[in-house]
Image (tube, rainbow, N blue to C red; front, top):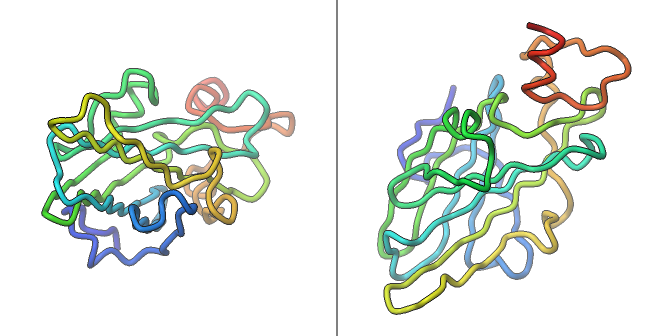
Length: 191
């Protein structure tokens, strides 16, 4: 069944993804998939969580075609935040988030329905880069300290696979010449 989004990572039954060297000891990331939704549980270690602290989640399908770009989402102690330079506003509205802060850090549980994901490949195996950035902004600091879970925009060990069930559940049959699937493409061909 779908995980309960309550900001408690202990009961999240997903696969743990290892961060790059820079993010080791800062991030814990688990990912899971059900029906047409990508679920993430994130813990960013911080001994003093402030209202200015944030976690950015960057999602990108590297095999989605030459014009594909990733989506960026921002979350804080108050849950999902508007990210003007991130994913389109309609995609941001689809994402569900629960946050919990304590003396050990900031924990987030997130649900990304398929329509909130960036352009994905139409036929080949689905593989996604999930990169996190922790923007640790303490009151006395002028700028946040940014720590990334990825090295040069790539996940440690390469992209993680998403079951093909995602495309199956969307019931899409794109024409042979279509390289990637995106919300605009769905509306154009399947409306």
